[in-house]
Image (cartoon, rainbow, N blue to C red; front, side, top):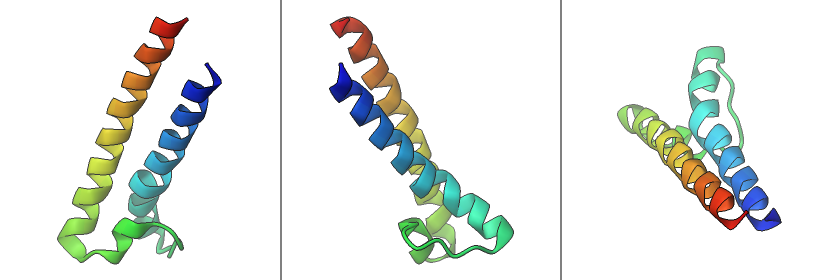
Length: 71
């Protein structure tokens, strides 16, 4: 069970830092060190950030269903 929790935590953190942080940092003018989508040119950084958010939500849903099946 703790493997599911660890994987969920990792996916959540990556989803937040690589998906949500770039949008927030553009609003406030921040330059986060590890937000890799911000290194892309203008139309691509927000597409990649949005894709990271969508993929993170899907993976979290899959992990949650797998955790419930294992219990």
